[in-house]
Image 1 (tube, helix red, strand yellow):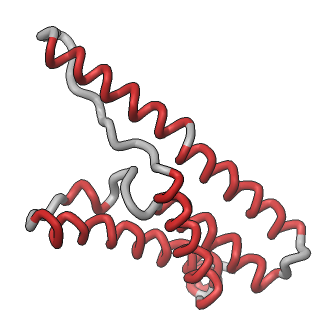
Image 2 (tube, rainbow, N blue to C red; image 1 turned 90 degrees about the vertical axis):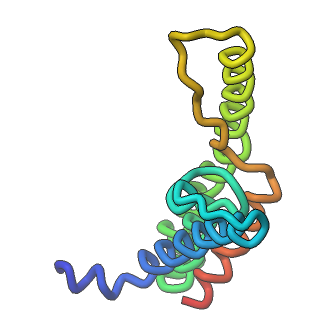
Length: 142
């Protein structure tokens, strides 16, 4: 085992490639729609599609494909994927909405000791769904 084993780990590469494709879409979208490049989208959270969902579903499907859809490892990956996707559309999205309120208060009440907080944290259910579909396709094809 060693670095060579990582090079041939198909579930790992399926997950990484799926993440890169999802982040790529999020980076290209503002270029096409607004004619501006936003470097923060390369690694940022939130937006369409969910790279969290894409990554975990690509891993899960690839593990199922190579270890069996009846394996304990597939079951663990699937449950892990559901937790990540629920978190992305639920808890992190709620935190993003709270950040919007905090930023409004900071700006409109001139609170000098506070800095704006990041608002784009979570995902809509559609962003999670599209990310999951992307991950399933990449995991199956890889």
